[in-house]
Image: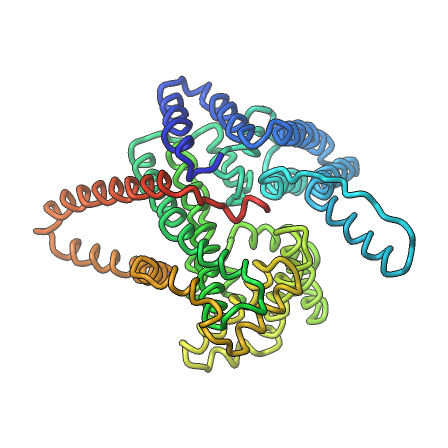
Length: 483
């Protein structure tokens, strides 16, 4: 089940919200847990069995770590927990990939062995809930958080449906208190609805529209791809992946608020960045922070000299790439970002700071877009062909049918909205409006009433428009479902 489905919007979510508000406080977690399991089971019962096994294993391993916290056995149980979690992730996410690469190696050295394709299906969201479980075990071991003795509460933390499928990656310590004490009030609920609807609009009204152009461009054989359509395609994908994933995160944060939870932000306008380092402080923040705290710093971070720092960065971005998918394209995408992080650390960041700000933005967006080619392409051959299409001028006549399909006012309008929404312009306008109102008390009462009415009208209009798009268009992919 996806957030941008009519079943979720008009059946599942209303029922769960009503139950959450009418049921006694001590049963709320149980109801949300049942709802989360049903939500996940919609994608396949076998997937749910894996999730439940993960919950049970991490609950008892956490108890054992806590029981022997001041002895060496605690470290042993942590190691067992890490091995079990990464083992499950490795088998289900990378089993096919390993077999495929072993066959390539055997063939290259003329060994007459061919392993059969195991045909392992990837459980939806396993990368996200595995990292949440790992952070729980590590934090219990590090004494950053007390062990959870209630299996329902721990199960809810791992499987809470707003962030179960595609994040953000929530730390147990951040919501431990909220599992037992949270406020279901009108303020939280209304702000949650606003955030959810804005996220839905990002996904349905912007990301889905760019997806059509991006998928079309990347489906054309690179040798038949015109330069203009190649650039249009990667620009479309750059917008698609941002509005798709940040839209999902907005919906998750909004849903959390509706149920009384406060999740941390996952995006902070990454496309306004002026360096790759800044980009990763703004993009998929929960993942960046996870790797920083649980991999980069334990490896030594930048405390062991320059060479070790560069090695740590490359390793972190190697893991970041492979985390996103079992493909060498994802590894290359991660390593490219790691390489430019190192280049900036070598002194290029000082050069950047002296440059004109638009050049800093151009540099960052250019590197990000080139990396997205690797991320989106089917394989290296496809990516290399796409790069050639970008930088070898080819006439638009190659793809006039594509140009005529997407060269229209709707695409132009959505592009302008997407471009502006990738910047801080709406935030700045909102801040200026608030400053004007607060400095003019006579307008405050009138404005507050009219503003509330405008917000309600806007939310209803956006929800109606999004629903219309969902009814009339069957194309509704979620990029991060495969991760």
